[in-house]
Image 1 (cartoon, helix red, strand yellow):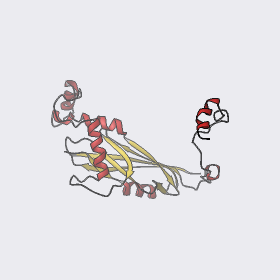
Image 2: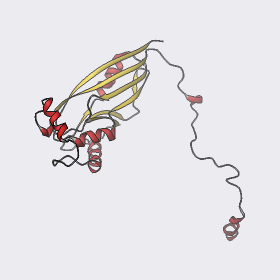
Image 3: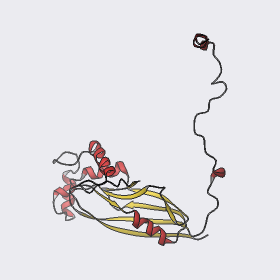
Length: 208
């Protein structure tokens, strides 16, 4: 059985001034299809510490910010948890040493380090997703789309998304666990837990 690894990099342009949601479903599906991997996994990972990857349903409706409704709902929630960076010293980060580091690496101004909200949202939301490949196709269910989120709204940025496809180029055995039997995860009471107790008499006798 041949095991294969394919890596690709997607180059993206974020707009700044508001978080950017990039729909990369088409590109990831094409990379999986062209990889030759029939069964395995694909990891979609951000190259950046202020970005995330999300697998979610396409919301279809768009607003004037060019965000799907579900994306803007998510952004509203994240803004309640982690407010936008709008005032100097709103967060501890960036401190004076980090600001000097930014100048050392030729950042255009101190303002570019005032993206603490983006860093915290990335930590909360996660920087990668892993999905299953079955019979040469991405297994996203009926409605899943893949989005790369750039939470950094300080300025427009060029971004990179890393795609790693791993798996076998051959068919696999039957996937059904125990013939596809539905697993019952509901609580099962023992006979002792369901046994009669004399204290029941008061209620039961009232019903006679």
